[in-house]
Length: 367
Image 1 (tube, rainbow, N blue to C red):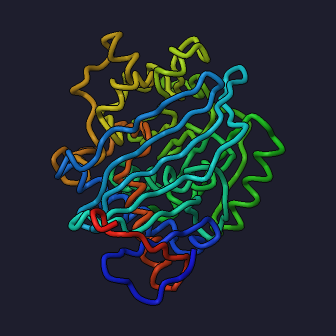
Image 2: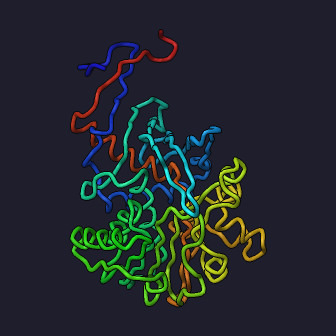
Image 3: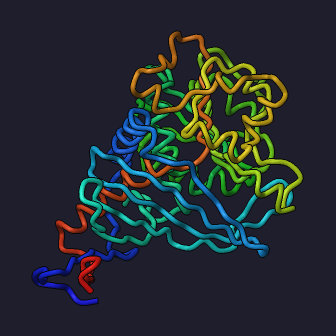
């Protein structure tokens, strides 16, 4: 591609950005604010965003598509990403994950403004894992909307890339006093706590049991690759806010890779939750996301007991109404309301800084 000095008649220029050209352009605080705007607008104009759709090859390659937009940011488009999915006992792993690809159209003119490839992340962390930044920021939106305002003690399951971004997200929306961390590997757990304590300059400590994660915590967050529940919901305490991130989809079962749907939460967590929020309502039943779909089928909850995160942000649903309630954010899957919000900010800043390459293409119908 060559940089074009000016647009020629009957031609449009679209900006192409690669992984190295989108680095260092957004932080977690900005991401939380952008995603909150995205989910608010998605609730106000529901046909502007569609559920995540996934397709699978027989060899375990999965491609995920996220279509939608944020009119207030002037963008509509899609994110597409591919990965190899593997299952090892009670955990899911990814032998290969490709860079996500973003397509950004102007939501008023239908002009394709650009294409962007690569992972978006906070420069403090560098790359951690695919889509971990967006997922972490969405957790931050939920914590800000549903956790008690005086929340200071956080319990965290997991010590991978998702967990890194969860800590950055809660640090963006609450005054952290302590984070307690449990993961299966003690060495990873200790190293993770040392790294994150230095990064946010707060107390981040390893604990030996899942029970210690939950006890006396204001917020309990699970950020794992588990296929099965990671904690006992009967241990939850009044007033806690709970977050899980495994949404799963029925294709994993239908394709023969799993005997039952993935879930980090047990039925007791769902039963005890006074408020249940999800990123996208339709995905719960469309993908048969086991964490909530199975309890619905068992009569533990009804579909009407589940509310969109956007409806809480707009005030259409009151969210938490007392300090004694247990609130639960089933961070069930990404949506374009989040992805395109981040992409638009990064794209505009890269363009302002003269990054990337322009590709000159004919206006449709003028070839």
